[in-house]
Amino acid sequence: MKTNYRNMIKPLILLSGMAFLYACDGSDSVLSSPPPPPPPPPPPPAMASFDVTVTNLTNAQPLSPVAVIAHQTGYAFFAVGAPATAGLEQMAEGGDNAALIAEADADAMVTVTGSGAAPIGPAGSETVTVDMLESALPGLQISVATMLVNTNDAFTGLNSMPVETMAVGDVISVRGIAYDAGTEADSEQAAAIPGPAGGGEGFNAARDDQADQVTMHAGVVSSDDGFATSDLTEQHRFDNPIVQVRIERTD
Image (cartoon, rainbow, N blue to C red):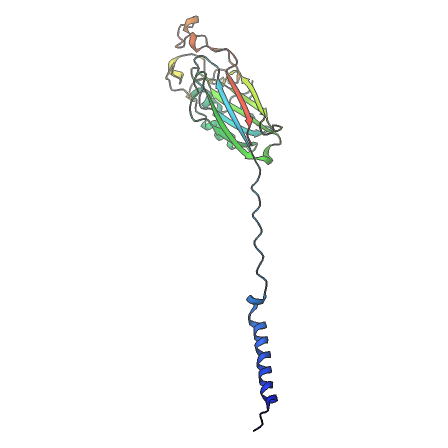
């Protein structure tokens, strides 16, 4: 019997072609290229950091926890000859910087704020770090505020120091004088002095706003120098400067 191989080969060729078409149509995962990997995440924005170190230069005037305010040109937490804000009044009379910082945080010209953790005793110091986007550097200034707590309403610090051109590692060191908030009479009596020399209540909105403007402070007179009703002594007197403020750009 003669076998017709030609008739057998034709079906095999047909089956092979169908299998090839099926593979081309239904096996995309085999023949297609894998999807490209996702793009890498963008780099984090560049940051700038400043260490602000405040040193107490007085003999017997502890300083309240420091407020540090980084801001743009146009903001100032006080101006000589102008009335103190409510936040400055609370800090200058009672040593609490919370209202002053809240005022700053609500100001569109303020970039970031920071606070010291505790009072700074004579010859003591504390460093507060403030961080911000590097894009905030143009026009950037730093201000510092703290109360002389053995007084009625004296404060000191730094008002609007430009730092925009500082490179990493640069240091600025300046000294601050004493100001009178003008929100309370300088009675030097314990009932109105919150520091260890008095132990009084400090801030009281009902007390007299003696001058209703910020001025340079005339200093403490004390009972040792003839102010008979004063509860302060010559140890609580102070001469300018009151503080040294060191600003270092660390990042």
